[in-house]
Image 1: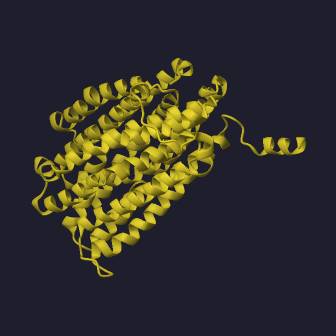
Image 2: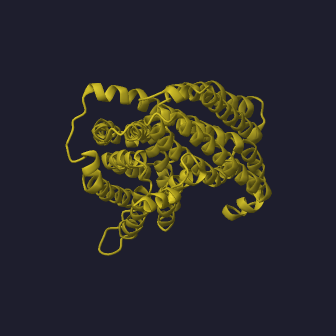
Image 3: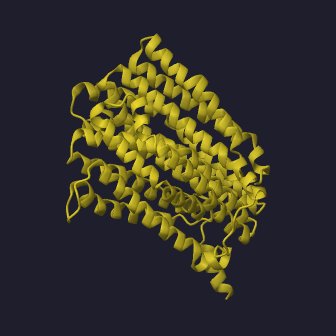
Length: 454
């Protein structure tokens, strides 16, 4: 018996160490890439219908994510609460946290149902091309009607990550992707006796896949070890005394996500004024930057769980060690990719577009991207650490100030007023990311988060 416990200790990764962090982060990277692939698969299928329909699905997908980002961001508070309560050994509260997340999906979904009725006016307000307009509105309204399942998926995915289970969401994300692709074939293209629905078919396929897997998430939440350990089988209506402390942590995350989405959308709109070549090159760089961003985000997500659990267990030393490991890992990861961006910049752009002007502009943008990689890794990892402690209000204020008083005004000034074109836009983006990364790191260094509890 003694020998067995010693061997288990040797097998367990070192608390706060690199192995512990990456064991939790790797499934998050796979799941996030899988979710991104769903959009890629939709785009490939829509290419067989027509360019207008393909553009509509891509554009409506961005609007869908912007509209739901506040609700999804707010639900991320569930991981902080679940992690800290698990660390403190308060298993019943961990189950309560899951129910709290599910309880909040209802008002979030009702709000999105109201917005669904205005899908067409939204795109008219955005001066959407007439060829794209009706397809985009169809896609958005169908996806918003199914938003309850989107929120249930995220609430339980985030809860599972909060208790340290990142593998189950990975498997479910891969399964959802396969089901979405299988449904796309008949619903978009009109096979197996189904009507050819085009953009609406893509929305219906995604909505059905999301609904099916939200039911799988519910079954996992309500059964087996989770039911026994966290008493998840006990239905709970959350009381105001439970909801308010949660909203204090969750709402700033939702606000930060929305602010960031809107500010980058404004950035893309300003770049769009510069011309088709500049917009195409920027889109390509963003697609590639997903790889550095997602890796850092996965590390930040793992840090939220581990830091939350160690703080809940009153083990500040290991929480601080986890924070250092996360920051080091994220910075090395992002800087390594930054070097690849610089060395292979023209070759990377050529994979997406063979036009000489696009390759030249894209290559130039990648130099800016390489410059801010260090600070992007720093900012994302520190945000994950701070979120684990429940320190979300300060990060929201920093994001609001820098997005609205630095990023958007500086982008407009350097492009439209100073006439610096694409260099002006990406110089502004670089300044913004450097300031966000530096600000988040300074907050982490202050150490205030170590004494915070939800």
